[in-house]
Image (cartoon, rainbow over all chains, first blue to last red; front, side, top):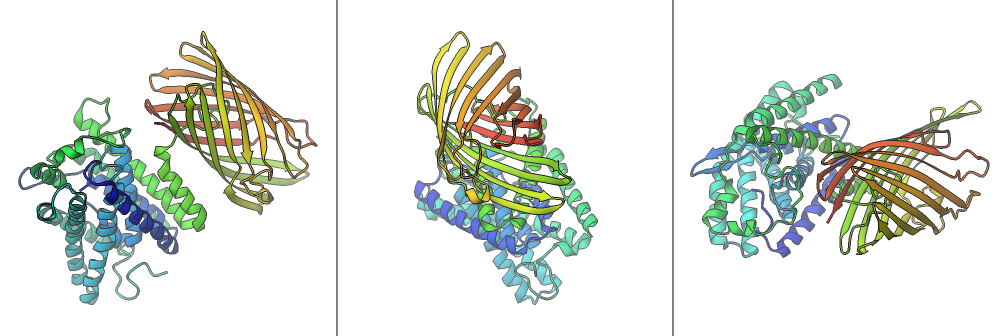
Length: 221
Length: 358
């Protein structure tokens, strides 16, 4: 889903860059309130895991591949704002270090995968988890659905940007992007649910969003 | 609890490394979702026509000089995973601890790092400048950082100073042999006396603007003059600046012999200040560089400056050793360790920097 240089118009590049920087700046403020001694190494290892997992493309139908994104995964572990920052760090390093995703499109990539993926994905998780009255089953259901949506919504965001940029008309780009990523999203849902349930088994205290009671949106202070 | 968290981090990190080392080389090489759509919907060539950022050291998750694709992918992933871990860890720490202003500034700098290149000192970590210029119309952006430690003990009172600096320097070649150089330093330090903090400051220090003119060049010898001014942008009452606009002039000589290069600097600096410090300062230093292999230079440096303290005639002197590694022709990273040779000089300084030319 990493958009390279050349796909998007400069208008879109600038607009998404401004929105993404603003969101990251606010994210820093939010994370500052909640981060303690424990979260720092957790942020490092979560980001490292996401980067590593993103390298592993799995084949899907029709000679296409997809990979894990980790937006909902990191949101559920550390909160959506920390997740936005993690996605930003990963995207910046991938762009500058590995030529994966264009530098001019960095704002759009952070928008699609960080803002839409992490913040949007987590919002869906949060609503569903609450609808199911924070039951264990509800947690996994919310996790599965929201991680699928994080991919499809992020891809749709990319399609809309491509359409506004005049690269590909919306009636072509949107169904194509959403269609392919609906399949990739299944992979995302499986990996996210498996990884979180493993962590929940071994270290339930580290899954900040899985609380039996009390504040959920972010770690209770 | 703490220990168990360490265990978790270790296991998580271990899993990440296993993924990159053993699974990533066997990942699907088919186009991903977006690439596929771009191919089938006919806009793929738009992404191939130009690239804004051409300096990625490990393009497409490969180490360019490793021929074996699987090894190349695995190792590039290993580097990336380590880099991400430390970057995220570092940013997390900054966010956790620092007040908003410095935090934003440092995070911005961290992200600017890869874009950055040349400073007051052309070849960081060297203190001594060389006669090199960027060439007409070319830029160099450097981000150089240091942390320093100093211990003194006088009349039974132990003073410990811990500080650091991040300096962003932008050089621009006006003509082939003249550069204009803007330096923006950000400093912080903490002074402890017998274990108690007596002073702790951070902030922008004095911004400098310099002109470097290489006026003569022949048979491996070159000579340059570097006049400069510094502006009182640092808060003087916080010890971050001199509080006055001040100026200086450096004379620089470089001699190149095969893989070796030597640089000699004489400098005069006017130290306008509101404290009762010496106003006329001098600097002398000598540096040598040697190209070990194609992309790696070993550097050494020695020098001294006049002590601004009127009561002392012991002038701070230093010795420094370091490495400069050129990832690409236009992108260097460097590392150095500087030691104080006498009491007035800072005991230990660790320097890390990056330079990008464009």
